[in-house]
Length: 164
Image (cartoon, rainbow, N blue to C red; front, top):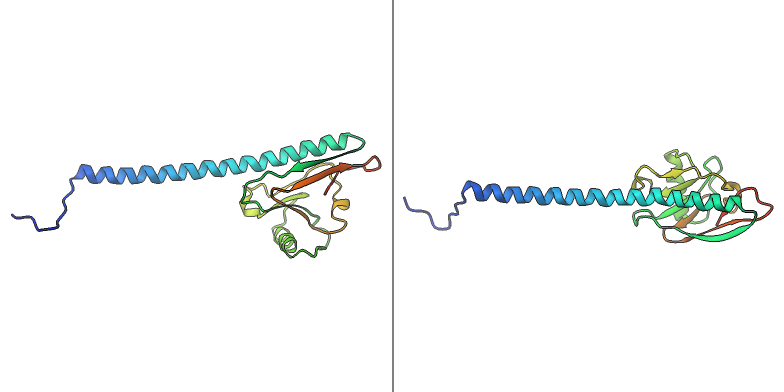
Protein backbone atom coordinates (compact mmCIF):
# COMPACT_ATOMS: atom_id res chain seq x y z
CA UNK A 1 0.00 0.00 0.00
CA UNK A 2 1.15 3.44 -0.83
CA UNK A 3 1.08 6.15 1.77
CA UNK A 4 -1.08 9.10 0.96
CA UNK A 5 0.75 12.33 0.52
CA UNK A 6 0.68 14.57 3.64
CA UNK A 7 -0.24 11.75 5.99
CA UNK A 8 1.60 11.87 9.30
CA UNK A 9 2.22 8.79 11.32
CA UNK A 10 3.42 8.96 14.90
CA UNK A 11 4.15 5.88 16.85
CA UNK A 12 2.66 5.36 20.32
CA UNK A 13 5.88 6.28 22.17
CA UNK A 14 6.15 9.73 20.60
CA UNK A 15 2.45 10.48 21.17
CA UNK A 16 2.68 9.34 24.80
CA UNK A 17 5.77 11.53 25.34
CA UNK A 18 4.00 14.62 24.00
CA UNK A 19 0.99 14.04 26.28
CA UNK A 20 3.28 13.42 29.27
CA UNK A 21 5.19 16.67 28.65
CA UNK A 22 1.92 18.62 28.42
CA UNK A 23 0.72 17.14 31.73
CA UNK A 24 4.04 17.93 33.46
CA UNK A 25 3.94 21.56 32.23
CA UNK A 26 0.31 21.98 33.39
CA UNK A 27 1.07 20.55 36.85
CA UNK A 28 4.14 22.80 37.06
CA UNK A 29 2.05 25.92 36.44
CA UNK A 30 -0.51 24.79 39.02
CA UNK A 31 2.20 24.22 41.67
CA UNK A 32 3.83 27.59 40.98
CA UNK A 33 0.47 29.37 41.26
CA UNK A 34 -0.26 27.53 44.52
CA UNK A 35 3.04 28.61 46.08
CA UNK A 36 2.56 32.22 44.96
CA UNK A 37 -0.88 32.27 46.62
CA UNK A 38 0.64 30.70 49.73
CA UNK A 39 3.26 33.47 49.79
CA UNK A 40 0.51 36.10 49.59
CA UNK A 41 -1.35 34.49 52.51
CA UNK A 42 1.88 34.53 54.52
CA UNK A 43 2.33 38.24 53.78
CA UNK A 44 -1.17 38.95 55.08
CA UNK A 45 -0.59 37.00 58.29
CA UNK A 46 2.77 38.71 58.75
CA UNK A 47 1.15 42.14 58.25
CA UNK A 48 -1.33 41.50 61.06
CA UNK A 49 1.39 40.19 63.39
CA UNK A 50 3.66 43.17 62.75
CA UNK A 51 0.80 45.64 63.19
CA UNK A 52 -0.22 44.00 66.47
CA UNK A 53 3.39 44.11 67.71
CA UNK A 54 3.77 47.80 66.84
CA UNK A 55 0.42 48.70 68.42
CA UNK A 56 1.37 46.79 71.59
CA UNK A 57 4.72 48.59 71.75
CA UNK A 58 3.00 51.97 71.40
CA UNK A 59 0.34 51.03 73.96
CA UNK A 60 2.98 50.15 76.57
CA UNK A 61 4.60 53.58 76.26
CA UNK A 62 3.25 56.75 77.77
CA UNK A 63 3.75 58.80 74.63
CA UNK A 64 4.96 57.86 71.17
CA UNK A 65 4.47 58.46 67.46
CA UNK A 66 5.98 56.57 64.53
CA UNK A 67 5.12 55.31 61.05
CA UNK A 68 4.26 51.76 60.04
CA UNK A 69 4.54 50.70 56.38
CA UNK A 70 1.71 48.63 54.91
CA UNK A 71 3.26 45.71 53.02
CA UNK A 72 0.57 43.48 51.53
CA UNK A 73 0.12 41.55 48.27
CA UNK A 74 -0.86 43.69 45.28
CA UNK A 75 -4.27 41.98 45.23
CA UNK A 76 -5.20 43.83 48.46
CA UNK A 77 -6.04 47.46 47.74
CA UNK A 78 -7.04 48.87 51.15
CA UNK A 79 -6.68 48.38 54.89
CA UNK A 80 -9.61 49.88 56.79
CA UNK A 81 -10.65 50.53 60.35
CA UNK A 82 -14.40 50.57 60.80
CA UNK A 83 -17.26 50.09 63.22
CA UNK A 84 -20.23 48.47 61.50
CA UNK A 85 -22.54 49.18 64.43
CA UNK A 86 -22.22 52.87 63.51
CA UNK A 87 -23.55 54.40 60.35
CA UNK A 88 -21.51 55.07 57.26
CA UNK A 89 -19.87 58.49 57.53
CA UNK A 90 -17.46 58.99 54.65
CA UNK A 91 -17.47 61.24 51.57
CA UNK A 92 -14.98 59.09 49.61
CA UNK A 93 -16.92 56.96 47.11
CA UNK A 94 -14.41 54.08 47.16
CA UNK A 95 -14.42 53.93 50.96
CA UNK A 96 -18.25 53.98 50.95
CA UNK A 97 -18.18 51.00 48.58
CA UNK A 98 -15.69 49.21 50.84
CA UNK A 99 -17.85 49.83 53.93
CA UNK A 100 -20.99 48.47 52.24
CA UNK A 101 -19.17 45.40 50.87
CA UNK A 102 -17.61 44.52 54.23
CA UNK A 103 -20.82 45.20 56.16
CA UNK A 104 -22.81 42.91 53.83
CA UNK A 105 -20.49 40.05 54.72
CA UNK A 106 -20.73 40.65 58.49
CA UNK A 107 -17.04 40.43 59.29
CA UNK A 108 -16.05 40.68 62.94
CA UNK A 109 -12.98 42.72 63.81
CA UNK A 110 -11.71 46.28 63.78
CA UNK A 111 -9.07 46.10 61.01
CA UNK A 112 -10.25 44.93 57.60
CA UNK A 113 -8.68 44.10 54.25
CA UNK A 114 -10.30 44.87 50.92
CA UNK A 115 -11.14 43.08 48.68
CA UNK A 116 -12.21 40.42 51.12
CA UNK A 117 -12.11 37.55 48.62
CA UNK A 118 -8.38 38.12 47.95
CA UNK A 119 -7.42 37.98 51.64
CA UNK A 120 -7.02 34.20 52.11
CA UNK A 121 -9.80 34.10 54.70
CA UNK A 122 -7.98 36.76 56.75
CA UNK A 123 -10.19 39.71 55.81
CA UNK A 124 -10.60 40.92 59.38
CA UNK A 125 -8.69 40.96 62.62
CA UNK A 126 -9.46 42.29 66.07
CA UNK A 127 -6.39 44.27 67.11
CA UNK A 128 -6.34 45.09 70.82
CA UNK A 129 -5.51 48.52 72.22
CA UNK A 130 -6.73 50.49 69.18
CA UNK A 131 -9.00 53.46 69.90
CA UNK A 132 -11.48 52.76 67.11
CA UNK A 133 -13.89 55.50 68.24
CA UNK A 134 -11.20 58.17 68.00
CA UNK A 135 -9.92 56.86 64.65
CA UNK A 136 -13.34 56.80 62.96
CA UNK A 137 -14.59 59.98 64.63
CA UNK A 138 -14.15 61.99 61.41
CA UNK A 139 -15.05 59.23 58.95
CA UNK A 140 -16.25 55.64 59.14
CA UNK A 141 -14.52 53.65 57.64
CA UNK A 142 -11.02 55.09 57.88
CA UNK A 143 -8.98 53.46 55.09
CA UNK A 144 -5.35 53.34 54.00
CA UNK A 145 -4.22 52.31 50.54
CA UNK A 146 -1.86 49.37 50.20
CA UNK A 147 1.73 50.66 50.31
CA UNK A 148 0.84 53.70 52.43
CA UNK A 149 2.19 54.53 55.88
CA UNK A 150 0.07 54.32 59.00
CA UNK A 151 0.90 56.80 61.75
CA UNK A 152 0.80 54.98 65.10
CA UNK A 153 0.56 57.40 68.01
CA UNK A 154 -0.37 57.61 71.66
CA UNK A 155 -0.44 60.65 73.93
CA UNK A 156 -0.07 60.65 77.70
CA UNK A 157 -3.81 61.22 78.20
CA UNK A 158 -4.81 58.44 75.73
CA UNK A 159 -5.75 55.00 77.01
CA UNK A 160 -5.41 53.31 73.61
CA UNK A 161 -3.39 53.79 70.42
CA UNK A 162 -4.57 55.88 67.47
CA UNK A 163 -3.86 54.92 63.85
CA UNK A 164 -3.99 57.70 61.30
